[in-house]
Image (cartoon, rainbow, N blue to C red; front, side, top):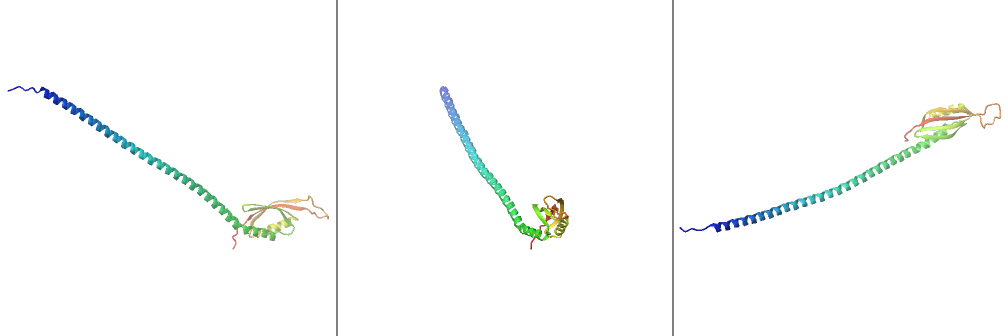
Amino acid sequence: MPRINLLPWRETLKKEREIRFGIITGVSLVLTGLVVLGVHIYFESEIGYQQKRNKYLQREIKKAEDQIKEIEQLDEKKQHLIERRNAIQKLEESRPQVVHLFDEFVRRVPNGVYFTTMAQKNNQITLEGVAQSEGRISSLMKNFETSQWVSHPKIIVIKRNKKGVKQTNKKSNSVFLFKLEMTQNALQLQ
């Protein structure tokens, strides 16, 4: 049997295996790197896409908040206009009452009684005036008590005033200053 030396063949096979292992390892590393790079690029693109969506949502939220503010301002303007309309309607409804009130004053005031000032706050009326006698003030009060346009008349002050009055005879020609309050009735006209 002849002797064959297999040593160089084994070394060649071993070197080929090492080269194949290096190539496979290199290719595996390159493929792994490409997969990692691909995954990284994919996730970066997904993150970028989500950030674009978030920015879009933030812009739309800002628009909605601006619209909400505008709606709130419009609601405030609407409420203000409703209040103005109600005030105007109330004034329109009370316009005939003023006419009736002054007409009532003309009819109810006896001779010898004169008003110097009149003030009204809400439905409370304050009158100040001059009368020739206390009896005329009493007559005025009785007339107002029977009125349908005013109620609860009450005298606040009656004061005798002699200043500036000429006395031609022995009777006292003094006048009486008075102040009275009453409530205006809100009657509905038919």
